[in-house]
Length: 345
Image (tube, rainbow, N blue to C red; front, side):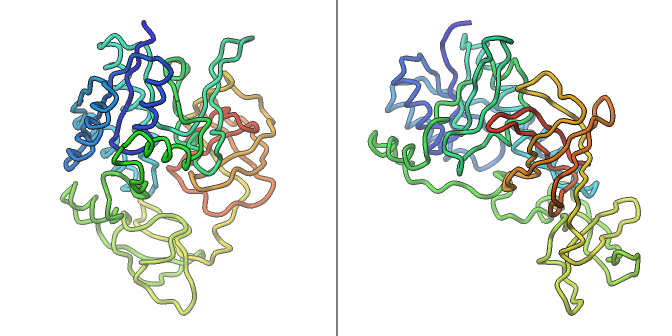
């Protein structure tokens, strides 16, 4: 493969700035926008305009069927099981660094670039590619890249890994990009209004049955509106008044119950993890001391990691952690480097 690069361009400022940096570094680039779901035409037009300014060819790939099956389908099925997935991790694995990487090969591009804030390094002794946090930690996105393989990392470039968000916006503004000050989306891209339960009901056409709210001793407290309306740690929107703050502590799809408790009931030291993927190391040893991050917004915490199966491990934190949520990813860090991770049970 050549050093020709397929630059993933979403229409946002990050991917636009990444393409600009690649051009400045002398790479031959093709801009690529993935059409994933309805209403994404504006993003493709914005990406095309940036490519026009940079003198780059722009392609649009309709990956909506794959996105619907792998990302949206997984999101719905996980919620139906009382779990809370991170669709960005799934999308990175199967779309941006899966299907789009295949498109890169078809176009003669040996590399793919995205606007993620993270860094890739190659260990000269082992030849292994290592995933490292971004230099600008407030925007670090290494967490959502935890499912990438060595093959995917070997063909990836993250031009923004050493920059701050302010530097990226300034770079875009200096080059006349209309999206230089476009706000970052805080919601899941295919649920912009944040109404997960409503989206799932519309997508499936199902009416999820009501069931019992119970307390931690099993006492019935009232009726819930369907399991897809809840996630671990949730306090708002419960639709029940108990005279004190209540939080979702457990979801049992078999019994169709939602357990409510106090904030203190959400804390635990021990978390089981499966579906393991290792990045900066080929595997981990039993009894490893490292830091583990339980969700994108969580600050990683020191823990002891034990292997409890071929594809399972247990994380024992030094201090209790709040609301580890089944379906989310636990990502293991050694300083700035991602060792690997897996899905919380």
